[in-house]
Length: 121
Image 1: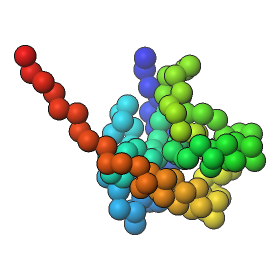
Image 2 (image 1 turned 120 degrees about the horizontal axis):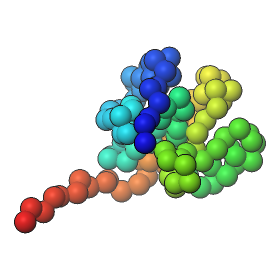
Image 3 (image 1 turned 90 degrees about the vertical axis):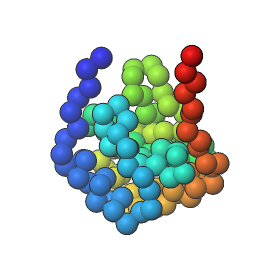
Image 4 (image 1 turned 180 degrees about the vertical axis):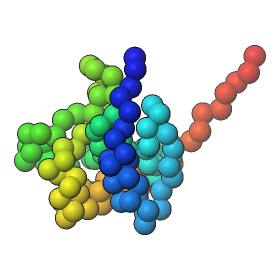
């Protein structure tokens, strides 16, 4: 499967939002992604910005905005707890800051994700 190149505007946008947040940057699927305690909480995939939320926050957001969808890096393969945010949400500075704060609080409550050790034969 060939991935779409991420628009520079969205990559710059999320990088700017992350500059004052204590998080780690890695590439996932060739796109920028951000992690706290080894757990991914936001990033870009193609031309989409995604965010991880608690189940309650995700349900509330999807109830209030029909444009929010589940994040599916591959069609038919949604990632549990992740949503795609439409521009109307992430370009609203106040709303995006609230959602990002909720995501960070949720991710920070999760246990540290340990790196998998490869066993060589």
